[in-house]
Amino acid sequence: MSYTKLKKEIEKYYKQNGMSFYYNALTTTKEEQESHLKRYDEIRDIVVKKWIEEKRYKELISCAHGGWFTYEEFTKPLEEYFVKENLVSYLKFLCEREIRFKIENTITCLKELEEDDPKITNDIIIKYDKDLYCDVSRFYSFESTVKYRRKTLDLLDKYILILMKTKEKDYLKIIENIREKVYNLSIKKADLKYIKHKI
Image 1 (cartoon, rainbow, N blue to C red):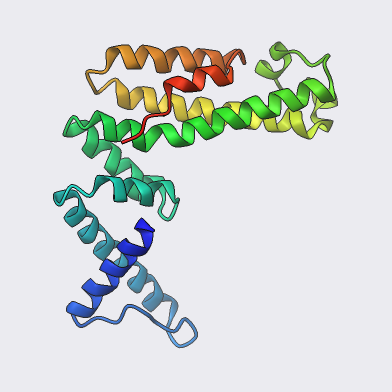
Image 2: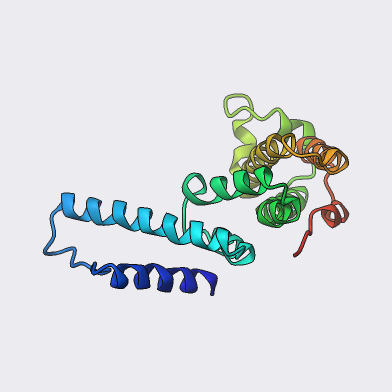
């Protein structure tokens, strides 16, 4: 819904400034298409800046959660803004959602792997090397566990670096503890109660 609102405001900006929002890819050159996409990004950023000035944070976070734009061009600047303005509640709301989903995926895959082959230990998963453990890669649940654990750790590492720029020391310790549990695969669904921030 928020993305639809953002798109409408972008289209409105085009119209107010005498520009055409749509173009025919069959009748435009590659250079013209690239120019159109660059202009779109510039106008999107103008509208986003306006939304920030109007404190439409929940709608911006909704757009980020929808995955409509890349992390670097949309979510990262939003994170930096929330840190700079000390809007930690919005920062948590922005960042925790994907971390929570990845942790849930890791827990689910780990449970499936235990059912597929109880002999595969957490230590094998943590120390996984394709050359050494190629025999376990036949399990889809094993590969999924390795993948989601790595993705979760990457997200948590990135989040920890962001939190270090805030005054949220107690919360930072909680996230570091969750990171440790993901690392050693002792994470449980009960741990998710610490990352369910809402506005």
